[in-house]
Image 1 (tube, rainbow, N blue to C red):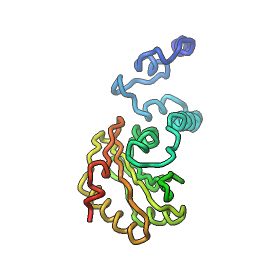
Image 2 (cartoon, one colour; image 1 turned 90 degrees about the horizontal axis):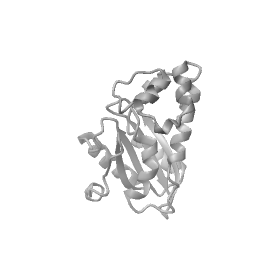
Image 3 (tube, helix red, strand yellow; image 1 turned 180 degrees about the vertical axis):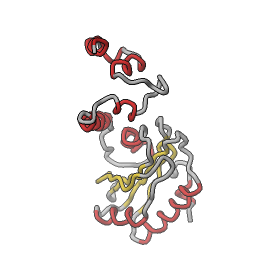
Length: 196
């Protein structure tokens, strides 16, 4: 307990990860990159919901303001990074836009495992219609750290683009956010445009 009190008195931002972990009473597998689960386990069961809420609030404070309009992946990546770059499980999100390409809403449609999550074409279409969206950007994360799309990512993106065309909703981009922050944009790589 005396050890923890010493660290509370110091500016925690100046401490190393190892010193911070010691103050929390945890040992790290990788001293440079503690996982969120390692940190949460340092707190007792009753404190964990409060800690998770604090972490979520912090992530939201790091989000960039919504751009007036979206013209390229770089416009939305600052919105996506705080949401997705540190996740240990894949999540699938949709950004919904009006005719001026302004973001009108964002929703998480599914959460999966370390290796995959469901991209439901029906859910994307239903959500777009609910918000009267003219266009969407879909995004998911790769906890593995590799932002490159897999074969199923490419195949499902084509199926989604074709389905959305039937209800007059444009698929502007599909962005993959890798753990650590590296991103892959189907639009910037030219894949969205050449899908037929």
